[in-house]
Length: 472
Image 1 (cartoon, helix red, strand yellow):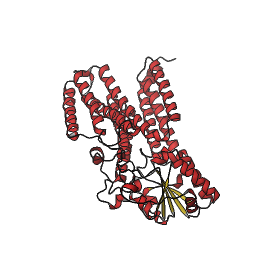
Image 2 (cartoon, one colour):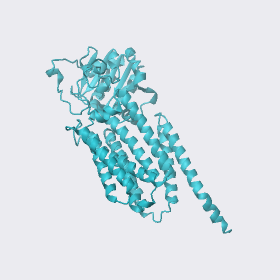
Image 3 (cartoon, rainbow, N blue to C red):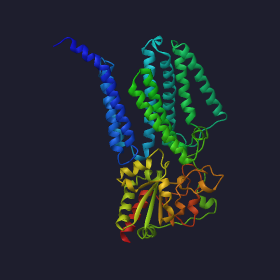
Image 4 (cartoon, helix red, strand yellow):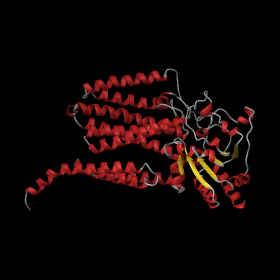
């Protein structure tokens, strides 16, 4: 064999590595494009996963890993944890799981950047690499601790109400200024590890104190924002490692997450700054049973009456919310819809962008029950149809159908776009009680002349409705 052949091959290796990174990046972009539609989301996820596999394999060989024992052990442990979570975690716990994914992603970026700092002599880092390291530690650590707080709020470990104290905004501002000061000191004297530890500690505190004042009603936006920050942290770490794939993939995640965050803010008619600094929303409602306290009355409906209303309707719109997920009622609601369709009823689903407790929560929930994608309508599409709808079934949703958002200027949700279910001929709300929703405010829809309450667990109530339908 010609002894020059290995040298020739070696000359082409860097180019082949960058070509593999380009292929992986293309798969990420195409996969992200496919995620825009539920019909192609699965294949898009598979394409992105293939791109990640290519990136991991090429990176490992590119950096001449001497021992793969720890890497293989990590892959095995991570795979076992991932498969277990995928099989065991309930749909209602999916927002908490996504929040933890964001947190660990941010922590991984900060730890990798930290590993580079303590592994390589500081004088070997260029100025842009030190700047990227500071950004990675800030965003990655903030995302980790902020996600822990979001997880705790969603899980009920701490209250969902905003946790504020006098001067909390000023404290956060001072901490951020301190971070900038020590960041500059670290940049000028990277050989002093004390500066690095201080900026990491400040970022740790900032993540906690930034999310504590954010209430439960804003958690979907917070989760989306944390997801975006995870991508930005990964991108910054890519600059530290001089890894083009990490830069591209992190930027894609950061940009996509920020676009989704802004879309959700628009759906709530609230600027992102108000979400982060406004301390709005609470999971701990104090209204109680409004029938007794306010002297208002509601009309209850029985399963038989509702069966008659729906089976003879021309169009029925189902509006799902977090209560549907809690009751694990997605499969029975599909059965009810199938039965009504067999009676020539036009059945549709109206999806509000912030229904549930994470972006796309209701879409994922209904996809689990194999609800046909064409039956899912977003807010702008379905709002045009409510005036021509005979019956709307509001199952577990509350704040996203509250008419006060349109009419009551004193309401904290005033101006938030909602599903205009009150324009339908009849509205039936499935609820356990008249307690307020996640925003902690009363819902005037309950007392409208065209509204009815079907009290009880959503799954059991839908089972009663299905039995009644079969007897009509």
